[in-house]
Length: 417
Image 1 (cartoon, helix red, strand yellow):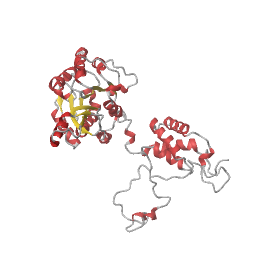
Image 2 (spheres, helix red, strand yellow):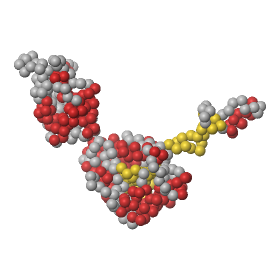
Image 3 (cartoon, rainbow, N blue to C red):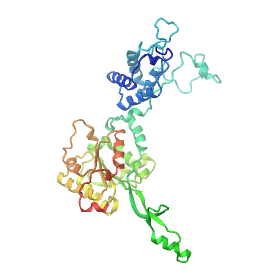
Image 4 (cartoon, helix red, strand yellow):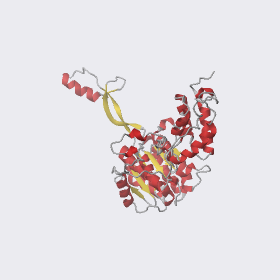
């Protein structure tokens, strides 16, 4: 017999099935509900089963609604799906029973309901009266507090090229918080360790014996230090990448400040921007970077830019054993053979090469463009990075250890990394 105090107990529905069905109905009505948000809804109703008549409504509203203008669609779909299905008293004739879910009266401010700042007290607005109790305004005419998901969560799956001008600043704020971490490597420097499984440090042991008359009373062990590998980012700022450049440069600036990365941009030529991006003021750093680059939104000389990086910076140590991240769509003016030749040189120096191509997100995308097709065989990871959520794939690819992947013969310089 169902528990009359538990309206959800009147229907034995799995949380996953309920979340999938309701999310599908919302998507059919035009409300964007990504799969991860539907999974969170299922987890929420599994961990905290809705025992009150409106608990299911507010759980779905908090998890699945991210914008104020989506409330009307959500309310309509919720009423169509659940209205009349769950009755707390399990009796339609009980006058003491509360209304079914979706049938209760809820007040919320309209779109044009804007309260001016510094509103004066009036008899019609007792809550604004000087010294008045805020509880005096608690009534059916009082505005309801809107409960919804984080205001910036709806931007997570939006492509950078589709951002509205007012959303770019918010996306840059989100991207600036991303911390890119590289795998570690063993350094030549050593440190003392109490573990006897480490290597015996003869030099320190003999030096310590000088204090005891030449007798080695205590053996000293040491092991090699570990440090993070260098991170180098090469960003394409040509005309074809312009919709993504504004966000990618913010990623470069955050990586330089937080991870000590090296940053380069290229179009018709290569420009090093590490010094310009060291400022913690993002706007100032990007302004300095823009003034230092003269070929913004030009053509793309991919092979020449990679050759310039290797000859001027890479062979001197900047690329040796480093994780190289190339942010480009691969549309190049250079011959594919030249791109492949320079990528082969770069792969013999770098520990890993991660290529970020925002065009990869297209359903029918194939890397058939000359520059991209020539560079792909030398890449260890190929990701899109077209949105904030897709940048998690970039972070995972940068942090990955090459030892867990099949070995690739990159040439005689492979042993130096």
